Amino acid sequence: MRSLDRWLLFLAGLLLFGLVFLLEPAPGYMDADYYALNGVRIANGSWDEPFLWHYLDDPAGVPHPAFSYWMPLPAWIASLGMALTPFLGDAAARLPFALLSACLPLLTASLGYALTRRRLDALLAGGLALLPGFYLPFLPTSDSFVLLMLFGGLLFLLVAQKPVEGIRPAFQAALLGMLAGLFYLTRAEGLLWLAVVAFLLWHVRSVRGASASVWLFLGVGFSLTTLPWMARNYAVFGTPFSPVGLKPLWLTSYDELYIYPAALLTPARWLASGWKSILQARLWAAGQNLQTALAVQGEIFLFPLVVAGAWRLRRSRVVQAGVGAWGLLFLVMTLAFPFAGARGGFFHAGAALQPLWWALAPGGLRVFVSWGERWRGWRPVEAQRVFAFGVLALAALLTGVLFSQRLLGGAWGSSEAHYRRIEARLEAAGAPPGAVVMVNNPPGYALVSGRFTIAVPYGDADVLREVAIRYRARYLVLESNYRGGPLDALYHSPPDFLRLLFTFDDTRVFAILP
Image 1 (cartoon, rainbow, N blue to C red):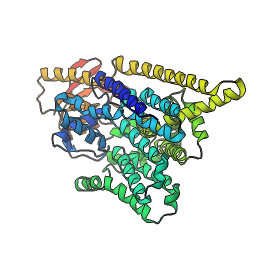
Image 2: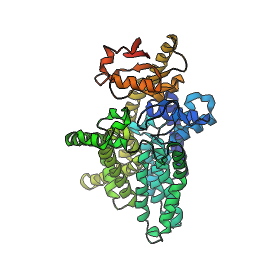
Image 3: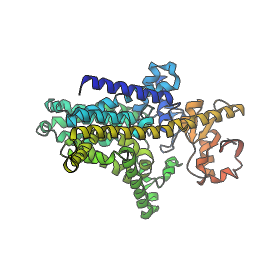
Image 4: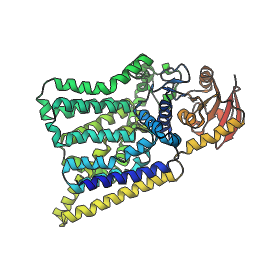
């Protein structure tokens, strides 16, 4: 690759992802709201959360120590934006993610070149990262997507580059261990990448023949990035890991993520749901995750090219590790966490492999062109260029359609706008500033209102009242997504402890009476 190629890819990424950043009116959804708000608070010196979005760790009240469930690195990145550009307001929390996104095309092109040593293939890989399909609106916002893609691309690039063979094995092991640690600080399943890194190290000849000190340095690298955080968790929660523990393993439906009390989530209760229900949930998750693999990760038209490209380089340790990592993530997000996996977990976790898939697609295109040369008499150089432009055109079309539907259609940020209008009505109704609000998206409502918020629990009206009393909630914002569930009766015959204040766009807002 030429130096000019690298600069053009970076500048193109800066322009495109910068434009998306400017067009996005808000973080967009609960995960991004969570990291944006925590970034704001960390920049202001606070390490607690003014909301409860789950009850799995039996929280004592609001505010609550931050990051009892989700990992902290995206919030740390968001806090840098707030610290450096506070004049941008809440958008400052998203700015670093837009800037990091600009590096993706360059990194992916570098990975493509390391795998094939072909400039055209590298440029095509970089172009695919510039036109990322479903991922476009999610990259410049305050979430883990761009971090996972950068760490994944960097990990595979470090191993694919031939000069890595000459680096001292101990240094290489420590560097890869640090990358695995960054994966873990980004998302909890990032711990699985330690196994992927170990596989990659084992297949480096200079490491395989080295002493056990290499594996010690792998642990040292991982510990350097993770031990300070584990020490903080131990000081705050009494455990180096999440205080939630293994409770998410025992969910029998997605909504039970918000169950109260969390002590109800036990292996005995999970087994009591029956093997038929347990197997059905995992078959459903497998179907959903396979759809994600085909439509999101493979972008439909790109999927056969990625498969062909992976087969073409099947002896590469990078490809073997990538396919193995995908299989590992798929199994974990299907068998262990089927509900969270199918509802976005696999979509998030799989982002780490996206640069590799984009880098493999040009090789798959060469397989197709070779077939055309053999059976149709195509001129391979011309055909490769023509079809490369065709692939980029399809990627641009898919990305544009999806972007217009999600962002330009008005759906992106609609929840935040809705909450702002509800908050204005609440203030007009005399709600005091310190009143706690129970709502579907606690981080999102807290971000736009500045109030303490808690999640609507999974359960009936009695459970809702118990939670409201314990956490001193004064208002309930009941959105339409609770229809048909345990709280369905509240829409037409609310209990005596709820007094309807107003209805706004099919959202009912109640005062919670003592």
